[in-house]
Image (cartoon, rainbow, N blue to C red):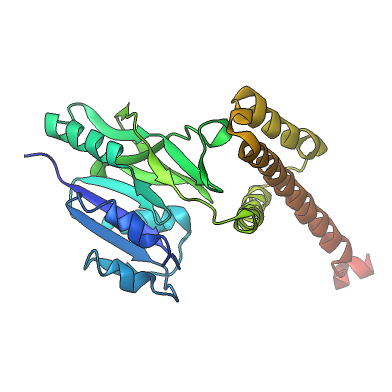
Length: 267
């Protein structure tokens, strides 16, 4: 018999997408869902697919994934986001691997392909976007900096060919809202870690992101959507460093405006 797999999903207010996600995981040996107190029908829909639905306050991507991981019962974990779907080809590839035996491998990684504005994206910074999402529970955990978590495995990892599908943004407004939110999180983390603001980062990193995605990684082959993605990735980088500059300016201002103590006045 093959080793068993626990599918683990974290979600919040994803009633339009969660059903597709969970349907693509029905071949797994169990589905475990960790919801962050959704206010729509997300939890109700989840319970149509599994009785293992839990709720926990949001701990960040790293904390939330490690929490749901501990609730799983089986030796292998498959992480999936609520806006993702295991493609039939990837499902068959995984089952084939496990049917033959996983051998020395403690993890599997595979490409993630984005469906964006009515088209599958095949180039640029968004593809192949390799993700390690299937791993042996006792040998892997989620690490990284918010909002870019990653699974780290203490052993051999094999790359599969078939993709997990990602329905990432509903429209351009949704894309811009996410860029705004993620750039704030990243800038705040850099500020807390005392990463210095440099004008060279603000001036050159956005250009580099556009050039890498659109030219070096052939984003232009995805047509108008490839151009939009490259431009918005560039804009996201610009906003991240602009917000880091803003935090540095506020800190300097607060130091200047800090009231003097009695000892300072006497001096």
